[in-house]
Length: 277
Image (cartoon, rainbow, N blue to C red; front, side, top):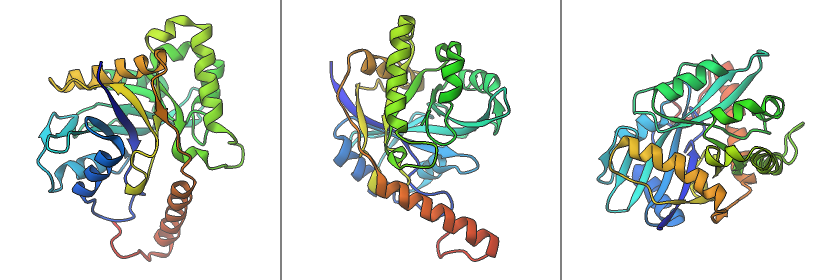
């Protein structure tokens, strides 16, 4: 079985920081870090449309599958993702990560958890718990309501930017991996349905591929085969303990937070840096 490297959770930039992404630079970095057959997730966070912007920009020749782009000369696949604010029964807001929906399909903001699970399934995507024990993570809810785990396709056990300590969120990645291993041991049925995700969650091009995981190669027959490959591949990676690289992106996290704070201040004062959206 041929294995490829994947980094499926990337935003490429801090929302609003600049107006254009260099497609060729992104693909070259992905090829360097992930190698032939590598898979890069480009993830929207409402209201941004990073994937759609990326897909519309000029650059290397590509094949469009609707939910993914294939760059044949570089042998790199770019998959669409959506990170979404979701409301728990308690009213608490958490983030969830979906992969594989079609370009132009955007989940509704701030839906309830049950509606979100139904929505992503109807869109033909897969849904996971990203940074479950960091800020806006669903991990504490899943610790109590473990029955929901059977409705998820994957759990992010390492997020590069979550290595940064925030008050109340110490050792978030260690907790995620420990929880993932525990629930699959306690409920062996999850070994058939719940995969793992190791990702960078980068907000810059230099973070692409810093954290990555091995998956069986992606079938490019059509958009559905891409989704099935991702779903089954993350389960297989967990069951077979496939190699992965866990990088603690302290610099990327600090960079992202600094830009986010700057933009918040800039919007309040109506002063924007050159190149902002």
